[in-house]
Length: 277
Image 1 (cartoon, helix red, strand yellow):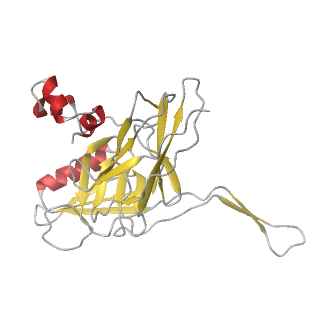
Image 2 (cartoon, one colour; image 1 turned 60 degrees about the horizontal axis):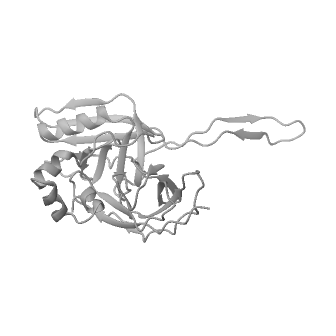
């Protein structure tokens, strides 16, 4: 069996550059590890972190979870495999962290730079997008069921499939500036599915959810500036791909240092270079 990896070490960031996130470090990496899969555990769910599904390792491992849920405790664990494909036992869990973010994040899960901060407020005069009905105020959980009569019984027999996740979820966002309208329009029309991360403000959909939006309606209000974006959505599985648009690029390295030697001075390890701090 492959050597069990250590529990991940995690660091939270609540700023919006590009969005709230949790950095996951796995160190020291066992010498027989060839690939690693990192899991996010929260609210009874165990999900693979994007960019860390069977990732090839050569030493310590680092990944940023740009889809960490808001307002709930989350832990991380990992499993490694050797070159023969033999899996290790699951690592111990990291210490729990809670991203204490009051806004709601609307984002394309494949493009963390698309994230838009939405204030869970109905206050007038907001310059940031505002969720008018605390996005996710109602939801329907349907099931394909059959009710069949039973000979000799006053009670029929009920059979059914798996009850589905939330559907009929209202998305209702108000913007007060052209820039805010453009940002909201771009993320709603680009993301498929849309990733929503929210704390207690979105009572029906706390934490993290992926939504498939049907028709999106944009309404310009009488003042000629404010806009309301509405849609109805259903909870779906997240996309399986890795991140398409990386927030940290080679151009960032060129901005930070003129030479490779300067980079080595700034970042004593490769993991620090990846993290950018």
